[in-house]
Length: 170
Image (cartoon, rainbow, N blue to C red; front, side, top):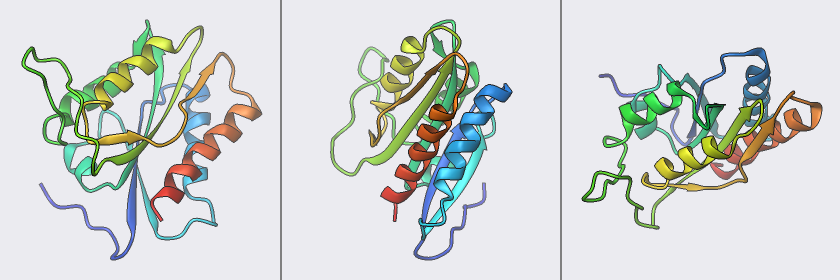
């Protein structure tokens, strides 16, 4: 694998998402627009579809934004595949019984999460947070939970989420 190069002095924000519908893509686009806000300097934003993201992307990043649909009370299969692929290499910790174990509190990198569902997103949020809790990451913004149609207020909140995570890395 080749190392990912970033401009000297710049932080890297990795955006990993599964956006299979125009509804979810609208949230993703707003998150990305916020992360690219003109007021934010010194942050390289790297976007990856969940099925294409690799551990080297995670290891090269200083912060993360994750987006998923809520499917049958769980995160998308694509985002779960991402976690399965990168977990151990990215510093994930397992307990003796093979379940995710909480990581140390120091040196954690910030992350944010947005989830869209038609009826409920509770299980999807819980499933992502249980895995992320075993990575050396720390939640840095409130989870954006969107149920039903995406409205202007949701797009504004998604923009804010993207901008918040990018600004934290400056």
